Length: 383
Image (tube, rainbow, N blue to C red):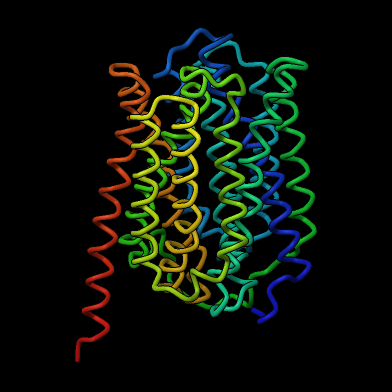
């Protein structure tokens, strides 16, 4: 743990995230079009395929947290990136939605290992007084990946078909594994402690985070399809705008999460997400989709730093893996369950109604998080 933030290991971790999540960004663009195009599925099938990874990831994240505390961060970072490469590469050979769903389950294994170990390593490398700032900067790898991955996927699909897109994503997974191996081990000396799969104090804030991810998952699943429906010729534009706005805002407001109480900040972010989604749902034109995306992205700017600051505030050093595993399991519930549920809404009522439903989910999360913030405030002033 150091006061200096931008160390070589911090930069390597962020670069590994960039490689991993650029591969994910390629999949975000390609997967719905792959399922509804060559594989002949509908919107519900696209939602199922997109969210299927969450089943295996949800089951395995708590175990990944325990292994991260016991074995260290590096084995799971490297292993997760390599499994991602294998899953992406094999998707090029999938000939049915069922095969894609099976491979998405494999990618859930990769997600569990890489994501849990990555957040634990980040908490190891950052000073507690700069954790929110560290989360903001480190997440640039994720959001740059989500910004540039979809356009890269679009280019690869146009130039060489879906096979090029999946093989390109696989190559990025290999790059992430190499960078993760160069970080070394960040875990300090192991402290004797009972093994707990679930870090219970992290559950309450993680529920709020879950609603943000369910809403965002709906947006990511249907952004390219909705862009096509409203007349955008560049169907990856909303995903690109989303990623760029988050990246720029995370840089501009990197220190805000360390200066404001985490739970009220998270509640405000959820309110912005809800506004953006509802606007995109009711203003079904290219400008409406872009403006709604900008509002959504401004909210997302603060959700991860705020909620993970609240989660890590409940954990000691030797509990960080378990806390990360618990919190990230709720990410799976959101990113997995949200697209599946909203896919059913899209099939029965249309994509705009699915986006509006995502906005309502975010609004419910806002109300829950405000309740937690008020409870925490009462506890702070209690004699």
